[in-house]
Length: 229
Image (cartoon, rainbow, N blue to C red; front, side):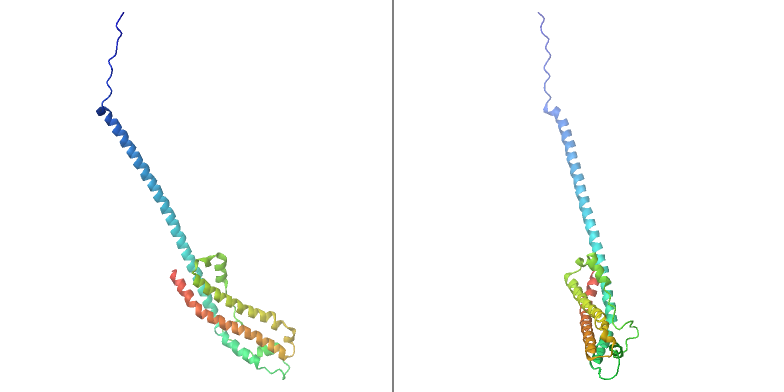
């Protein structure tokens, strides 16, 4: 019986022989971790920069919008103040003249007395009562830009335009009331002149208060507009 052939046992690799491949795999793994870490950090930084740039652009756009809104309202208030200022003393004189009208003499109608008692208007006045603008204010309300303005400034503007609405409403009440009454076109009577006087007095008092609001709040609006430039 032949002896069975046996292969010599192959000794296991020593630690020295298996060392280099392990170090290579570790180095590759280390480079892979660093690569993904750097790539992830770059993505995070890019996203943060994108958000920051977007917020900066939005803040700049809101700042520019606020400046345009405030400058528009400032110009509107300045225009209204120039138009109204010379008419307030005229309306004061007019109301005083109506108060002193004697209806016992003459046959003038109430309308004729109304115009005869009116003092001369300024040369550049197109009407006895001012046309006050409010388009810039309406645009600020409609666009929502008012939320960008400081509370104190917004409150001052609301005070101005509320008073302006009252003054304008009084003029409309004159046209729809005293000047539309049939008795105004008849021979002047004390009651007719009294109605015209009281209506004009309401207009004059509201205009005087509005003019005071313009003088009070316009410096606040100008300072706010400059702060956004």
